[in-house]
Length: 336
Image (cartoon, rainbow, N blue to C red):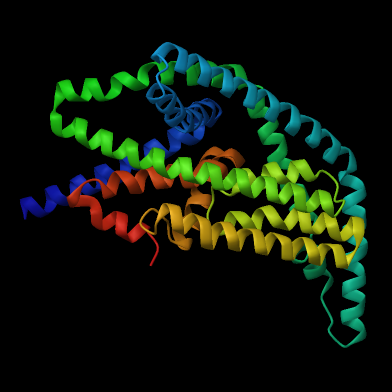
């Protein structure tokens, strides 16, 4: 009886601790998001720094080169996103008005063939403008993150400076822990490296597709496709919806159909051919886990949390896979 009570007590304490941690993360999201972005960028930068050292450059020169690369890439991305967001925001009322016209035309045609749609459903559930409003709020959230770019940049520098000493510190504690950290970091770097390259290819192809179709803000949708490619399965759909809607209101149904087909072909090639070939099937996540992680991290950290949801969840999965006693949990998080 006592053992059963102590087991229940431990379970309650663990659940209470988890709830308190989640509540603390939500309250401190404004501070936590820049830090997590810094870790995310540092993880992407570390393989490049190691590669430069293997080519014969010293650790200091490699670090300086990577830092300059991060600074230039961040500056270009900030300028690109900032200008594109301003342009999109100025045109948003016009887009919303055109979308409303298309929606009313569709409802009228359905009514003409005997399909009556209640006004409440037509105004709330079938509201394409909701996607545009959500997109605008996401862009504003990214804009607020860009105001912390200096803090993010400095944090990335300190993480890269300390990265080499992490394994040495764990080796002083235990060789087993050092091996665990090395294996975990190696798998995480491999996953993020492959995902980054496929995301870059996706962003470039989407930009070229929409530019060739003369869709407004093609570079912005390319950057969005690049970022959301880190979210498997669902991310490609989220990235395609606003661009296809914009093609519809700007250039008509024919161009919107071509844009949708282009997105489909790009994501089949990237998601079903390239990524499985280089990444393997063991590092993926099930679609349900991806969706739940989007909802959870989006609720805790806001729109930027949705972008970071899969990297955070895949980090948890890799940590679970690295230990025999928790590997079964990693299998549950993975694809079928």
